[in-house]
Image (cartoon, rainbow, N blue to C red; front, side, top):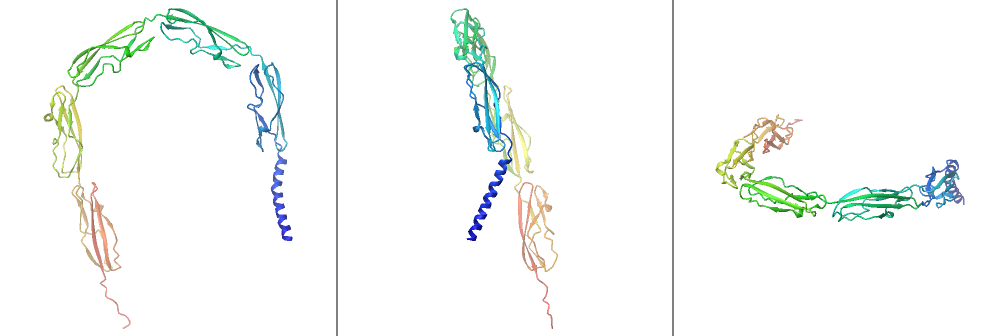
Length: 430
């Protein structure tokens, strides 16, 4: 029984301690919520209005309390006047905030504005839309372009000055009127042909007389498809050729352009068989072996190839040779070739014969050991030794000597070192 009473007492104490701080916090909250977005506002008769649109409330303890806002008062958007709305909100600690705003409903007396209805000049046959680019905007109703009415017409097939009248009214019956003049003129401007400049091309090169050539008219726009071309070019024969371009618009304005196409032999000879190559140190090398040259006009030019530079086959390295050849038209080709002489000969390690030493005898694993390379010379200082010899313990030890030359060729040699126990046993107690 006593155990149960003790248990209930602990639970009651826990609940009391849990609730008491919250009650203390609520009792100490004296900060009122804040109402935002309830400022005074001016409307025009007929405008829509929502008293809670954009209005919020926030409390330092309860957070967002917008849903708790109560609004009293009404606004008649159909009647001019000054209306007062009262916004009230309370937090859980019963701190209350009241905000009064004034909504003024006014009669709209401002006319709409019509834009884009400016005077314009077009040519006979041009397309024309009276409402293209024309808009209307009202201070109260916003975009009212759809309400624009147009009186008058334009005959795009006949020269003359035509007047169009644009009228638009807002909901408050404020009316705006704009008159514009559309002038229809006869097109007397010739089309322009572009991209038909004189050109020099190489013998055998492909060429299209219409490539890059266009025609544009002030009324008809792009009329490239109407261009007519006279004259021809023999791409296999050097010479000077004339090409004539003619184009007319719908008003029969005609433009003619003549261009000169000069065909020259500007094709360089081709040199073949000079890919970069690798050879080993001491190998034979002929710079012209397998190399040939041919020209579109002169044929085989292999015998006229010139090679500049040399390759020392007895010394590793990278050598650059430049091959050039010129045809009878003075077109020259020049190509470089990289020849790499590779050192594939490993260095030689000497003085690593197997060795026997006595117990505790001094031993230097590099004593008498040397390395030399056919290209790098003495590499003794680069020798690396793996393994060790314990002169205090008889046994057979293996040492590995390695050395690498600058070309990456590595030599590796193993050496057996035997430590002999030559100390006689000692007899004591005799």
